[in-house]
Structure formats: C-alpha cells, structure tokens
Image 1 (cartoon, rainbow, N blue to C red):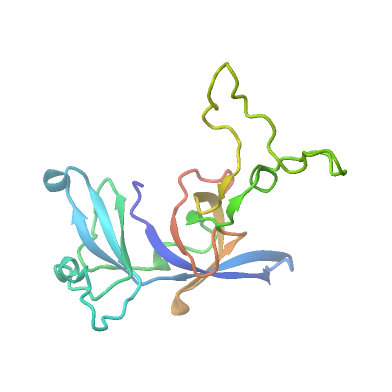
Image 2: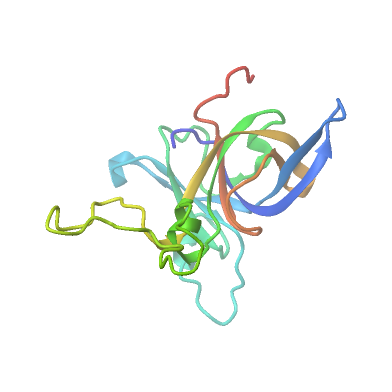
Length: 216
C-alpha cells in the first residue's frame, strides 16, 4: 500500500437511505477506530518504509500491557493492536498523529479489506456450489463430492481440487465503494453496498487503487 490515506474502522451494520433523486441506496455504516501513528519504519534502519498504526482502546486492568513499552516512544496509551502498512514516503506524518475519516471526502471511491464470515467445516455443495447427486432412496450418492481421481495414475489428489473443508474466515477486498456520507462529528462513514465480515469486525479502508471509470 503506497498511499498514506489508510484508516481502520469497525463495521456497524447496514441500513438504507434516500438520495436527492429519491432513490433508495443500501449503505453500510462504518465507525472509525482511534488510530495513531505508533512507529515510522525507515529504509536506512529497518530496510523498508512503513507506517505502523495503533488502533482501538484497551483497559489497563491488573495485567501489564505488552505494548506499553513500544507505545511509550509515541506517547500513546494502551491500544487493541498494531497494523503496519508500507509507504513510499512519510510526508508530514509523525509519531503520535491521529488518523480518522477526515482523510476521505464524500463521493470518493475507496477499497475495503476485511475478513469474511466463518461457516466452519462445510461440504462441497455449500462450500463450492455443487449440485449433488440424486435425492431418491438407494442412490447412495446425495451430497458427496464424487471421485477425486486417486487410482494407479496419478496416484495422488491434484492440488486445488474442490473438496470439503473450512469455509469462510478469508481476507477479501471490495474495490471502488462510494462514500455516500461522512459524519465526522460522530466518526461515522456511510458506504454504498455491503462489506465483508460480521458486524463489529475490523476492516481497513484505503484510497481506491483502481479508480472507477467516470468517477471524479
């Protein structure tokens, strides 16, 4: 990620609004998490340029915060976690800077990265959309995957074969989502369409890498 316009948010849920032409638009509400620059990694020292963000909040409690010493240099409090993003240059960015949705504007197109919902261990019909076998009695072949080709030749299952397994919990990127509205006083952003993951899940928002045709 070469652009510095990156922020972390929390998916709140979906709703719908009307635009000026009275058209119904499905939108997803995203809340900005507290994001601060925790570290600037330089090529001469670390071998690459990157910005490390501390996001979210965390109660100190009776346990020692494992990131306390790391955040001390940037004069930051306990955070939920760290995320690092490669950049070409730091510009005016410095330690301790806060990053929120003010880096975006209404009508702009952005990319969203998140982890999809997990569905546990699933068969080939739900995981890959197989049609299945006959449903009548006696067929002995209903929801199975069929032959996977493991006799004398080739003697093994080809890599990438569609088989039962864990479904979901994969990182996915949704490109070119339009910002319908920015509510900076409440740290909220309304995006057209749906986003990957459960409500309350962590998502990453960045400037669109492939600008949608006709978008300004």
